[in-house]
Length: 162
Image (cartoon, rainbow, N blue to C red; front, side, top):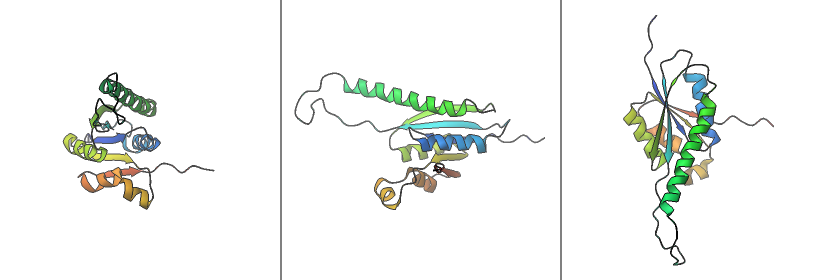
C-alpha cells in the first residue's frame, strides 16, 4: 500500500465559537484514521498597545500595566488552547499537534505563518458578517484566502435550529 504524504494543516483559533467550529470540521474531514497529517493550531495575540504611565486625566498609573497585560495574554492563550484541546481530545485517531502563537494583525500573522510553516492547507472560521460590517471591519478569512498560496477552507458556523 502506498504511504500518503504528511500534510501540515494550519487551523487558526481564537476565542470565538467559529474558530472551534473550524477546528472540529477539520478534524472530522481532514484527519482520517491513521493519517500522517500534522495539525497546527495558530493563535494570534493582538499587537501590544502603546501606553503611557500617565492616563488621559493626567494621573500617574500605579502598578505595572505591562506585567498585568502579559499575565492576561498568557491566560488568554492558555484558555484558547484549552478550549481547542476539548475539541480534539476525544478524536479517535492519534494526530500530531503543534501549538503556535503569533502577535500582530491577525490576517498578516496568519498569512506569514502559513508561508513560513509551508502549510499544505489553511482552515479558518468566519463570522459571516454582512456586507457593511465586513467592509468596515474587514474579513480575516477573505484576506487570507486571497493571499496565501495553499488551499484555504473557510468554515461557517452551523445554523441554529429553532
